[in-house]
Length: 91
View 1 (cartoon, rainbow, N blue to C red):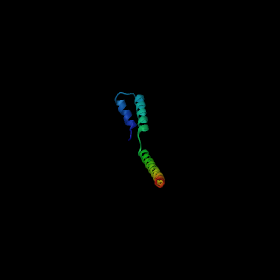
View 2: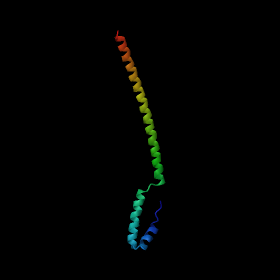
View 3: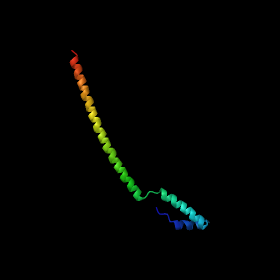
View 4: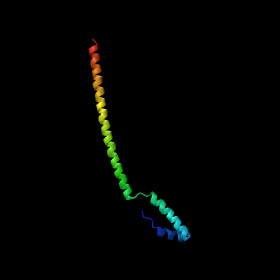
């Protein structure tokens, strides 16, 4: 988004502002607009960062899934051993 400061000053002067007042208002608006507008580069950077974050989260989720499967397998194996031991103890 381009902000034509010269045109804005002229418009304010035509509306009755003095030159110094018009320039001060335009400088204030230009600063506020410039600080709050995302550029194409800002958006591209954010998209890259989001993609990297998504890849990291996906990798961490896969690692967590693998650890859970291993733990579940260990629990099932231990439970099977307990059941077998109980069966052998019961006459």
